[in-house]
Length: 115
Image 1 (tube, rainbow, N blue to C red):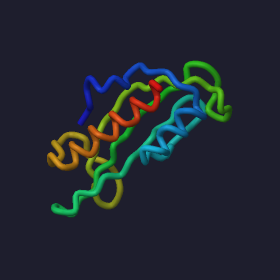
Image 2 (tube, rainbow, N blue to C red):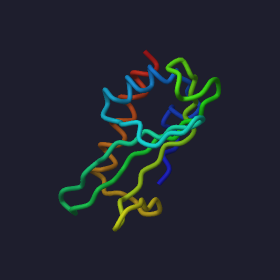
Image 3 (cartoon, rainbow, N blue to C red):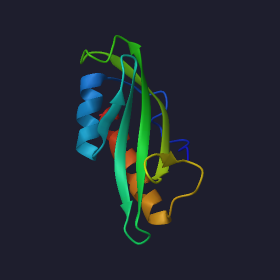
Image 4 (spheres, rainbow, N blue to C red):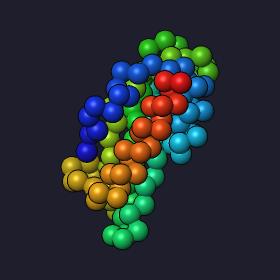
């Protein structure tokens, strides 16, 4: 599920600051290569015994990811449900409690990045 109108799409930040802000909210820079990085936040749905990942895709617009002053642009924000044995499914809607957590975390990250 893609999140629209988060206010994060198109936002620019240097790598060091984005890492710091994302970590404060609970995101981890998981996948990365020289020109793009993915930040993930695990959300557990204990009622349905399911796990979801809130994922933020970024792309370097200046520099490479090995340097803390590299400028990243947030490209997309989406939510996926884990599937066995590994992977994410992005088509189905998440339960409202999971959506509430995801929305809150995105708002927290946006506030930190705009401070």
